[in-house]
Length: 215
Image (cartoon, rainbow, N blue to C red; front, side, top):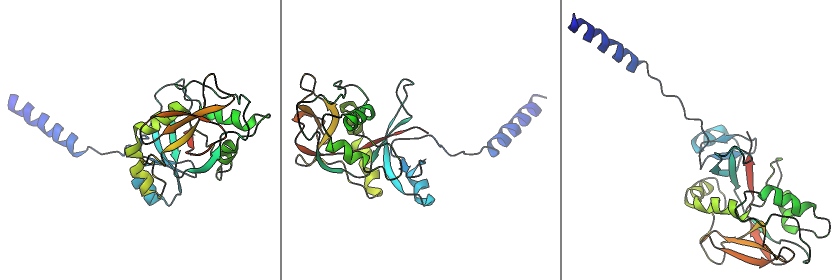
């Protein structure tokens, strides 16, 4: 009787193994591709989809208090522009270097009436498909720097601009003003070393826009 039970159990287990199916993992990951239609796809699925890439996912949000499911970085740099076209005005951005608030900061730069921000205007000009791209804060640039190697792989595959190591090309504007010097300076961030540099707002430097993924 015991042998018969063992044979039956073995048959059930073999049947269960034979009926096993692999289901695709659809969870968003760092390195997935953000498309112009809003889809987030693995690189393999993106290549088969015929969609147009606009960014690469670099951060997955696990915090219910933070806006969106994660962030994607735009494929291309934004040409060098000044943070402001004159100094002497607090443009209303956060000075918190630990805050993930680039979206709010960029809106503040764009809507300040006493001074114009060529940098913010250049970011708004790339909204070809309605994506709310914005200038990342210091904290958001840190997140991007932490996965630069992985992101660069997919930027290259998608024909984007790599995040550089070259010390002459690695500095980007953030949207974070310098505490106590808001009327004159904002932070640059190095994609080569992860360093920060307080910089006069009248200087022209490039930026790398990011997008909050809200699907």
